[in-house]
Length: 493
Ligand SMILES: Nc1ncnc2c1ncn2[C@@H]1O[C@H](COP(=O)(O)OP(=O)(O)OP(=O)(O)O)[C@@H](O)[C@H]1O
Image (cartoon, rainbow, N blue to C red; front, top):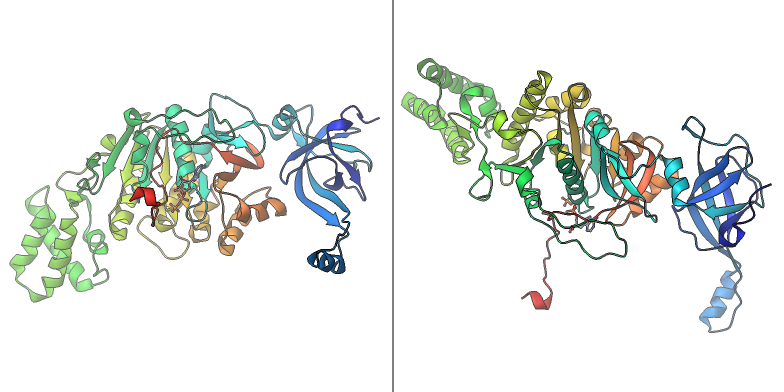
């Protein structure tokens, strides 16, 4: 017979037609959507399920509702019911199974105990390789992503703008730093340098066990514009490593055969006379030609020279990537074409050097990934991202892509991300792209993505076998992507 001893604390009783995958209960005590429940099965033992939907059924007719409007007393009878989706149980081999025979009507359903949830969902706490990103929604159970799996199988963090992507990515980076993983972050908006400073952990109703902590001793920051980022080291590229068409692609005269041939000639002349040369040298050669047709090209090169990104001898990868350290490449203020070229050169160098073990196994984190590996059109870095997504895992080069437009990321790249962290998304195209790429996503979970509050994420992969809803932990370090207040409170004036 089934356990009757817990009936006082029961969440509900099964009624109506009962299946092996879905069943309905009459709710007996407070129950929330997405909460886990446990039900005893005659053969399988305790099985867990999740509340997919709750309904309060009432007998209030339209007519009676009108009577309430006329301030008349009306009796309302209500019954709360819930739809439960069965997740399963662990068999003696530790594999997740679902029962093959249905539960019985009249059976009690209970609020799930933490130990049963952990066992059934395969959640392990305080593991050696776990990145703690938050607590399981409604439960004091730590959700940890397996770092080896993140690096080997890539990860995506997707949400609408302001959905909490960079906040959560900061959590992940803190964990990677604590576990001594070598990381390089491509940071188009300069949001991650603030991780050097300790944050202020907000008081919340839940205790996440997080203390403020800054990571200045573990972070190296490089910036293309060191004037605006005085704490960062200057990032420079060797001009002599670029071909004429690379340089022309950075200007507004991308497809001119005439200008390409002028530029090639000037560069060939310089290469024949010296090893290192600057953009000023290229401009001087073009000026000496005294050809009116060169004028537009000279103006563009002067504009490029003002970006001060090229030097006779650029930043070496050995300076950029240091074992067990996190490097932030701050691209704030860099024009898009230049950013794409920089990202392409860094990623290509990392991939090639990783192949020959000249840099340590590492994680490459790319913010605003839709700009560097777009689904439509091609940019300088499109090809290398496809290559890293497809082959990076073989060489220990993990990819973390972060974007507010899932539908605008190259599908060849997105589909290779086996760990997905999804925050609030409302755009229908993005929702479609996400639903198509997340394994094991039920219709109710997919629907839930639009309603996720800020600070709540849906995760799957990284050692987590089914999509889980997670309350994201607070940051230890300062979050650099705070939303800007347009109209301050009176006291702020
Ligand atoms: N887990 C959380 N706890 C508390 N506050 C959060 C959390 N996640 C996000 N926020 C707050 O929400 C705001 C937006 O978060 P965040 O900057 O991470 O969004 P985003 O998705 O990176 O935005 P954008 O697309 O504009 O870069 C910030 O002010 C941040 O402090």
